[in-house]
Length: 273
Image 1 (tube, one colour):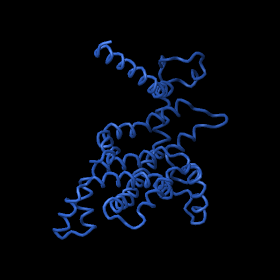
Image 2 (cartoon, one colour):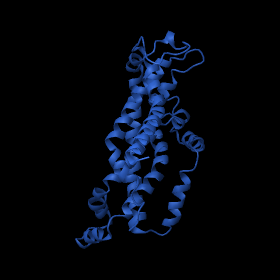
Image 3 (cartoon, one colour):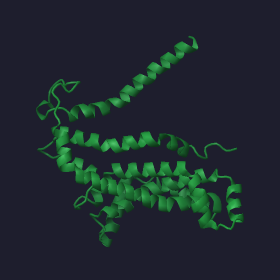
Image 4 (cartoon, one colour):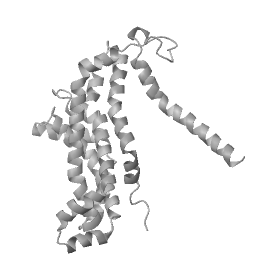
């Protein structure tokens, strides 16, 4: 088998695997356009032969407040995560604090704790503090998932920043904070984008924390908006799938726009000179 034939075969295999992985996305779009009376059709239509936009009309009528709340929670989670993770990563990478190795291990272990366990713990704490059913309580909860990941990404990336660059800033009279703000952060763009993206996506797609900590609040995220359509006697699948399609658009756009920064950010520190 020559190289050209081998490349074609691998291309075909890659396209088939991609089609299999993307089929659920296509089916989500197909169902979102299917009339309610055709939902139980057997066999189902592979194409929306009689498309309807009732589901998308329901999104515009019912789900926009949920989308706005999710956007607020996502942006708040990004801001809090960067505020905590970037300085921590800088300290672990360049300042070498006492106990830094133990802290890194603790952050790794923190990522292994199941979300439902953390949600139960937060429920008890939030109940005592009166933070249940608040959007900013969800920001705090979602940040606990994103911060350990962010610290590890920042630590790996900032470890690769040349020490000479930091030494030069100190010779110019910059302290640790000024060096971090004016020198380290500007060259850590890839890590900033990576951590921001994953923090936003975690907050945007969260259901466990939202359902546990904010199921009765006035401002609820889109995951609970979708859940509202599901009941014992009411399953509006075209509205559910239409909401899922609309909710997937921001995540897809962000992934497309930030993919090259993410590729550089998540591989930082993987290779040592």
